[in-house]
Length: 232
Image 1 (cartoon, helix red, strand yellow):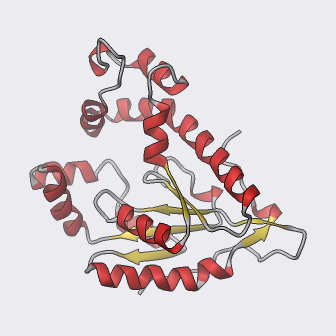
Image 2 (cartoon, helix red, strand yellow; image 1 turned 180 degrees about the vertical axis):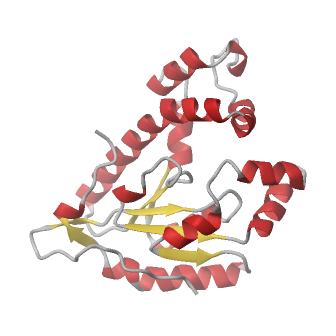
């Protein structure tokens, strides 16, 4: 069953509320995308940081211009200017400095786009449950910008097994890839809610249903003064 902790936020009185800010995160090959789809099926709007990142690094975008300034020409297609995301993803596993530079170049644009989408959705439908799907939530220090953080958890060896199957890499390569993110157990301990995705799909779906009908429905709005902006 999912773990539940105190949210640290107050339900708001009429006229003093704003929509709850909820983040969904996890670890590589923890099954976070599967959980996100389940929440979408229930009616949630999921704002996907990976999708926002793909748009942010399209040729001519501000984040793309920043990457051009810090990366070698070999990371870009000579004809179209398209970023070779696969090559970059492989290299930042090995190079911590490069990883930090890339994050600094891309994450502000990603969060700006997600914040704009959140404002648009909640202005149109304040009671709609909206999830910010951010894989590197803790790594980039965004956890305090949210009222509730849901962590999708899987045993590390299960992550390795899934990553090997998904990407066709060796167990050694998979374990090295996991070091790009903070330990999943560390994230689990700091989450408000946890979905254990180590088992079968039916068990995961039961946990999603429990959160959907329980805490996520109860905490649809919070006091305005609990808001901590993620961008300046």
